Image 1 (cartoon, rainbow, N blue to C red):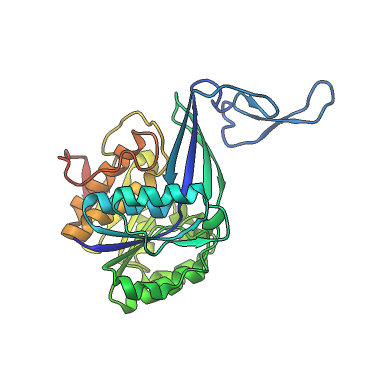
Image 2 (cartoon, rainbow, N blue to C red):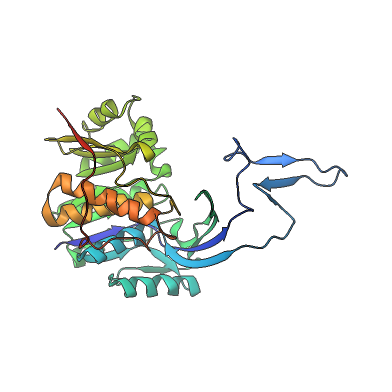
Length: 334
């Protein structure tokens, strides 16, 4: 097994689950709707059936630990790798919950930094019927990462560095990538929106990356193109191994020798999509760091992501690698 460092965020996820009050307004699910009050009182903001200023009953509340860094570290630990999380928390109850979660999963928390900010928190409004959710996030301690010292990798000497979004902090990512490479570690990178928006800086950063994971929208922002094969080809000018996901349409991936196109592992009812991308990326690396088998690792990534979206929370459905997986439709592109 491998020693894998997960670099990223740690958040407390608070789920508010309901079956009839969180349904988005038809065709306007991503639009803020402002409705003038008939009595000329201040305008009211409507989210589905919720009107600001009113009180509603929620079916269920669930407190969990999330964040791309801790989610991926959990996959590595359950798979049997030596998993180390590097990130920030605050000195508060939420921070204690993060540490308790890491300890329960067998993740090394020795390199977690406690800063003078509150631990990040997400309130997730989840509609039980559709699986759609709206996330309200306060980044807190996971808003900035410039306090983290890349030299801590000297004490870890990792085989792999798995980096998720650092809220746009390209400079810190570069320091960690350079240090990881100097130690002979390999790097898998799953950037977030704030990294993708810095296109030129991110493209220059890719010289250090061994495996890049992005979705189709992110790929089309980094390189010109609309079709998955052309996006893949252009990104491979920067990184040898590229994986591009496309939601319900599946994924395309290449390691430079083989290129595969495949759909969903299983077409199941989605309970909660939170953490699906983390489960896919970390699932791939968990399997790949053990076997170096590209295709089998893609299958496990798909299975891990499918299992996660079938449960409430980003960690509940994470697999262990000991499950018996079934075959899935895969096409090799010549």
